[in-house]
Length: 280
Image (cartoon, rainbow, N blue to C red):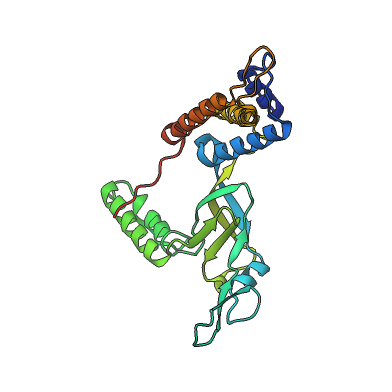
């Protein structure tokens, strides 16, 4: 019982931490479900164990190409947005803006995208007639014919050339849209080709039940329930029960708030992935 492996098991564990069944926890079942969802969402978005790095493949379709290469002010893939000005004496007018639907829909579980891998043909590193292949074929396999330092410098130089000739593709992604915008030349793409997406996907606790037993998630959900318990009891503040007992909803609420603040600081200091360095 101390190692919950189901959603209900996690709820029962947190209620016992708060004193149930010795104490009556004045929280509704719907409120409990909402707080479990909030806790799992926070865990997926912030905790390094709440996501997994994935390489998802996507097959380009004819519909993607048609939407991506739409030109002019009409046609497939063109989205129009208008903005009207107020009449300030010079007359009112309407401005039209056009946007190409150059995106692919990604699963809702994807919470972040790093990049897409290069898929252009490169004369530096791809194919039988590439420079890399010829370098291995003609020089490297002869014993002591090439110094390792010289080879490393040559490879670095070739990679610089490759980076200039076939640059990384520009992408845009927003979790709340579930759209991956690809700022590429859609007219040169071939239907049936695959692109590989480097992304982070949220773990589903229904498939990976060890999430329910995560120490941080159990503490965080317990504090959420405690805060809701205190919030529900605030209505009865000052009310005297038989025997002179007075409900202390404010104290329960304040204690839970302090616990949540401490847990969020722990999340930022111990469990979140560190941000990238910023220069300038």
